[in-house]
Amino acid sequence: VQLQASGGGLVQAGGSLRLSCAASGGTFSSYAMGWFRQALGKEREFVAAIRWSSGTTRYQDPVKGRFTISRDSTKNTVYLQMNSLKPEDTAVYYCAATRAPLYIPIPTGTSRYDYWGQGTLVTVSS
Figure (cartoon, rainbow, N blue to C red):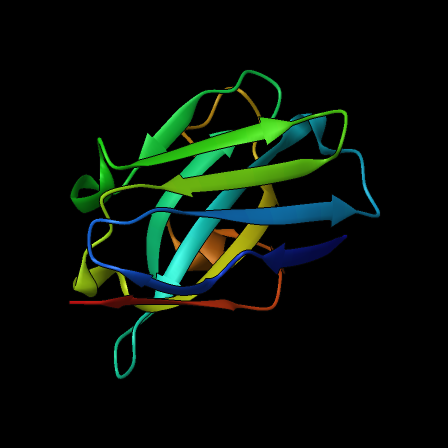
């Protein structure tokens, strides 16, 4: 499984960005796809995830109502639409994938994800 993240950049506070994660090398119907972020000097943290088959989503509390995760099965791509960005959203954002059967909750821990893409830097200026 290979994951390719893109879409980061510099944006002013209150602005928007959309991150993309192109997935290949697997059949993703039984996977959960997640976005994580790591700010300078901090640990990597969960942002949002989506179960590929059902579209069920899960979000970290600080981004609820501002970020939206979605997937396009025809393109094997997962998106993270980020609105109302804040300086504290500044971080390197990573996409990740893991097998997630329907009978378990969508994983949020970094150790639960087996595949990772390279990061894409999001910088929000005040």
